Image 1: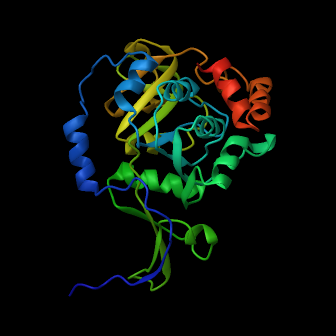
Image 2: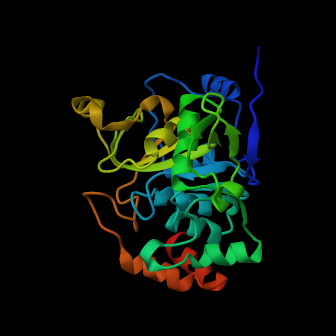
Image 3: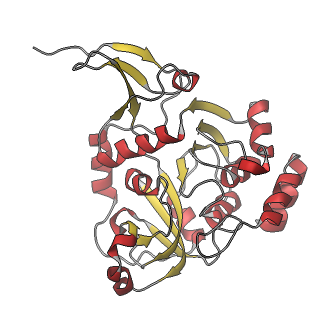
Length: 303
């Protein structure tokens, strides 16, 4: 006889980016090719084709590390509006997008600080004024589990975290009674971003992307997202990728665009290649204290 799952508590946050796993599987089947197709294009073309107004956007890397800034700039240039962003480990990228008026909603883990450098001037101002809505909150680990569920094609991941916290209360998670042990367990819903953006050290023309250093959530995110844009320091032959297949963190069949952009993570750090540009970050944080200063930055560096 079927048993009814007992729901003990429900977070009050908005459910962002969830799809029925079977519906998402059908979308991927109908819209993604598994062929070895040359996916090289400009960043301008990639954003024009795959980033739409109102999309749910997620960005790979971590904080100021390995961030695909060239795509962030192009989203600003092309005037995308009404984007919702996964504020998983977002720092410089989300602050610029908010400062340019491109983001209207955030699901927040860590979104409004520049780590040891201080709070995000544009992001904080936009949230306090109501220009940007924090629709839900979650932990960094919770976001990785959301992407893991999306990657696995299941509706949620069970975890023993979050329960009893304000983060749970402001999330879209639910707490149920485990039907085996009778103890509380938290269900974190899957997330399927409309577009995910990554910057990697090397990639072939088909989209097999290798990452040096810590993957953070990129393994799961690339497989959960519906569209994937890769920017890379260099495009290398597929034969070189095949020499070290264990380094390939993102496989070709999830990738939609490959854009060769040397120094495409600037001013963030690219592991083993170049360091943070602290002067540039400091300039943004100084200018972005006012809307007029942020616009001055965009005119100088983006437009």
